[in-house]
Length: 113
Length: 322
Ligand SMILES: Nc1nc2c(ncn2[C@@H]2O[C@H](COP(=O)(O)OP(=O)(O)OP(=O)(O)O)[C@@H](O)[C@H]2O)c(=O)[nH]1
Ligand SMILES: [Mg+2]
Ligand SMILES: [Zn+2]
Ligand SMILES: [Zn+2]
Ligand SMILES: [Zn+2]
Ligand SMILES: [Zn+2]
Ligand SMILES: [Zn+2]
Ligand SMILES: [Zn+2]
Picture 1 (cartoon, helix red, strand yellow):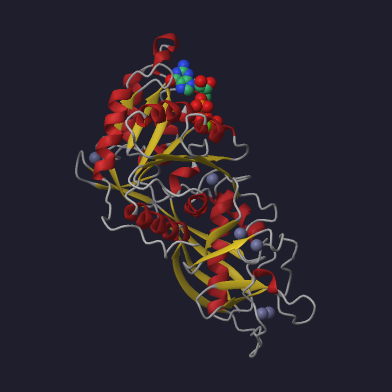
Picture 2 (cartoon, each protein chain N blue to C red; picture 1 turned 180 degrees about the vertical axis):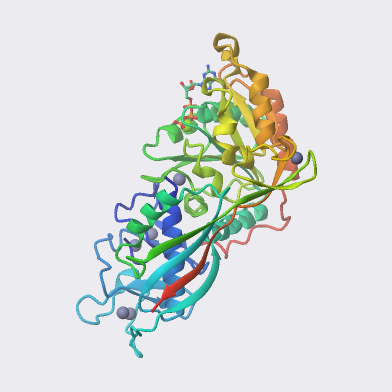
């Protein structure tokens, strides 16, 4: 359940940003989570709810944008989309994929009032 | 929740024998405090707010009792709150673009700089519960001790000091970090442990992470090398089931090879699965029980320690909390 620790980091970022921007209330928190980021969105939302309790982030909506994993295939030279680290190349079937994207885990935006 | 540090109510994270401890705040600054001073009794209810102090630290507090200064954290003096923050009705968007792991990464960087300054080679040992991390460490320490190396261990477990006790029985200093409900070590916990037990200057520091193949993978501790142990009692598919962990390994140590025949374990299949997830990782086979394969493991440690960046100047003592 490292989503609890991750949720705490998100709440820390939200608080810091809300303070810096003189926000009174945080309505929504926008996240971008890559398919290969090792983060379970459901567990994260659950963790966020409890981590946000008693802070300015309490009750804020989590808006999660998923981005696909991408890889370069050393077998055929194609740039391909992958769902996991152990995927096979969809064009040539090789397992020699070098992950090139989809590991990001960011707070992108806040909606505040 | 503690207003100075964000420590949980349970104060669930603890370092054995710890008094004052450090925290890395969201803005990257490091503060030091002790929980005995305020006992975490204060609540940070609805009027809780934050202040940026002139020295860059951030404190959170409430004005329970009508604007009284809140001396518990030893940093607040009276201050006014003009202009009061207002709740403008207007809804707006703020662009943030912050990496959620940034706070841990900053703390890890601070650790890394310190390890380089003190010329300490640091190994982060990770595995499922019971793969043999402590058994392997005990045998490794016995071997390295004989060569006059300076050694120390940080032990991570949710509860108990049992593993640290096993390490101390070898004569090597160890400090236990209990993560409570947490299932991994993070860089700040390492910083706290180092305040209690300094890194061995010019030597090797082993960190035994919490037994868990999932989230320790995501938390950089500032270590030099990540070693993932997979024991042959766990099945050949572990790397495929836990790819994030195997993907970050510098070395995969296959442990308990004394049991290969009894279990009919398929070593080549395991090796193939490791390669598939992480073609760059080194792989060695050992038995922490019999000592088989230890020459190669100790040689890998030697070679890795020599590659680790170090700064040849003496460590700066002022930079460290007193
Ligand atoms: N047969 C055999 N047993 C081993 C070997 N290494 C460890 N064990 C046994 O495996 C069990 C667990 O070992 P530990 O060293 O406590 O494992 P750990 O990874 O530190 O466990 P946690 O700290 O609880 O995550 C113990 O009973 C050890 O004696 C080995 O190489 N061969
Ligand atoms: Mg152990
Ligand atoms: Zn965890
Ligand atoms: Zn307000
Ligand atoms: Zn291909
Ligand atoms: Zn506190
Ligand atoms: Zn604290
Ligand atoms: Zn105040």
